[in-house]
Amino acid sequence: MKNVPNIKMLLSIFCVAGGVFLLVRSCSNFDRNSENQNYRIQPANNQQFIKSTSETKANPKIAKSKASVEIQQKLDEAKAEDLTNTAKFLAGMQVEKNPIAKFEQSSNWRSHQQFFNNAWSKLEARQLQKVRKWSQQELNQINTTSPSIFYPFSGPDFLYAYSLFPQGSQYVLVGLEPVGIIPNLAKLSESQRNLKLQEIRSSLYAILQFSFFMTNDMKVDLQKQGLLPILYVFLARTQNRIINVQYIGLDKNAEIQQYKEGMIPGVKIDFVAKGEERSRILYYFAHDLSNDGLERRPEFSRFITNLGEKVTYLKAASYLMYNDGFSEIRNQILAQSSQILQDDSGMPLTAFYRSKWNLKFYGSYTSPIGLFANRYQPNLRRIYRTDKSIEPLDFGIGYKYEANNSNLMLAEEIN
Image (cartoon, rainbow, N blue to C red):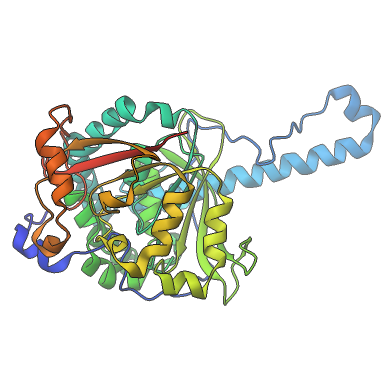
């Protein structure tokens, strides 16, 4: 493991979790793999396919239909197993009964596994256990509704969205990084597999250490490989089973279609949490959320509107929505969210009218990091200085990644 860089070095290289300086590249087809253990899949259309034996015998058409469904279910199980095994392999987790299991005997994969086991163990103790406990205490009422989670400027950060909102029915992440591909690991040479594992470790270093992605890292790493491998790792490490992956696009009518050139590119991942039956959806779209970007492609705003009531989450967002150039996405979030959870890099306190929002503050706010010193909010500092009821955060989140040094604000719409 590398030594943690000092804060001055960090200030010079990081910016927004969504990587606002990258260009979107189109998606392409890919091969995939995964595993099946301790999970059950609920049919996507929620219909009961099993007919009684008497019905089947009495009607050969029913028997034929049942046989077709059973074949499809077996194919779906095989696909889900293949997808999940690939995710686990990339995440340094052992797989069984799969062609890629034999590659786990290599010294490179064992080193990859050791890196992840060590890094994840530290991350669990330092961050994730505390984040989940805080979520259970403070966000439980929200989570019981299985909300849609909208996470703009996120990059591939499914990890914190899921840790804070583990019961979300769908997660919509947005950044500018390309989706990328997952190669067929069994068909790669040993050197190609090792390179893929190294790319993943390099891409994940910052978020494992500091709770956010560094823009400079994303420029270099994700521009080459895309962010799909990182989504796979986060899904595997959070004990989710991947059951389907599709390259998608938004057409001019804001409808999701199979990706074609000219559409807003994205990926749709259907997954099932361990011990559950219901499938959920993770979307990632590569799109520019500036006013210019939304004006050029108004279908994206319509898609977000069509999600209905939603919870918006904002972290390490480079204070972009303090700028007039991002006023449209800011106004849409404020108009269409039932709750907003953010650190101070999301939207300024002045954007939240007290007649519309109940605000609850957590943690500590003194000032932004030096890179964003001009975004200091005296009114927010006054609240933290005078309100003795504000509860501390025993974990770091956002740019001030040290425990007891970061802040969160939960805004709930007044009905």
